[in-house]
Image 1 (tube, rainbow over the protein chains, first blue to last red):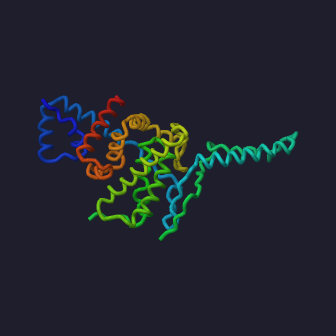
Image 2 (spheres, helix red, strand yellow; image 1 turned 90 degrees about the horizontal axis):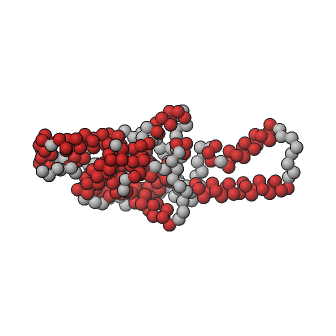
Image 3 (cartoon, rainbow over the protein chains, first blue to last red; image 1 turned 180 degrees about the vertical axis):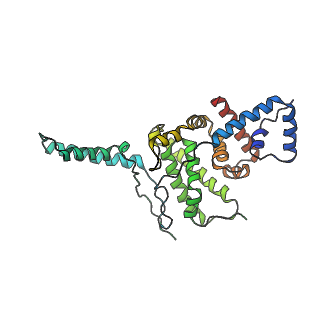
Amino acid sequence: MIHPSEQISAYLDGELHGKELNGLLEHLSGCGRCSAEVEGIQQVRAAVRSLPILELPEGVVPEADADVVPLRRNRGLWVGAAAAVVALVIAVAAMVTPPPNTVSVDDLSNRFGARVSLDPAFSSAKVVIPELNVVGE
Amino acid sequence: MESVPLTWEEVARVYGRKIYNFAYRLTGNPDDAHDLVQEVLLRVRKGLANYQPGSFEGWLWRITRNAFLDDIRKRKRRPTAPLPDEVDRWDLASTESADAAYARVSLGDDVQKALLDLPFDFREAVVLCDIVGLSYEEISQAVSVPIGTVRSRIHRGRKLLKETLS
């Protein structure tokens, strides 16, 4: 007996018609193996279709009336470059400024602020770097 | 006759989320999905002027697929950061609580991992069918293969998913 396995997904997707559809239905009525396959494929199909639909993150698409095309990011490169510059500034400052003997609340705030700017995990802000601006026709 | 979005803003509004979900399910990577949406919108804007009336879905998803494949080729030529698999790397809506976000994302973890294990051709066909919701005819146009090949790839992809998930 020939088992029309590859027709099963098409059948579940409503992509099987006419003689092919009738032939498969007739086959399924007498074939437990293919009927079980229909059930298994149906479960997988439902599992994929039930994956959460993700919303488009803010910042991917500009406002509808914007006349500039969204800008391609190069997040890793620019974050790395920015971090390198900040690290260099801190290193130079450390060399020329003696450490304070006491720590004020403002100092703690500033240190935390510096960490926020260096550690992407502390911020959800996106880094969008202009590479190409295409003005609307 | 099929209505065609006239501006890239309309394309972005109508298709942006689908393109993002397509890219995310193919890569499992939110940053890559983000970049792909922007690249596709750039190409749509350039290409709309020369768009010939026909299957807009086929045209759009061909652009999307080409942008995706171009990105893969570029990555092969330069080192990249490893793919993130941590939930906290997701770009989640700011109004969503952390617990709700984690529950929502974790829901499909096994299925997502199984998808990523599929050969690319099968994964692409399954995602275009089950996530994007294209017909076999539209997938055939987007991927430039006969409908019979689309049918075969979708079914073989699902069979492999079934083996992985069971």
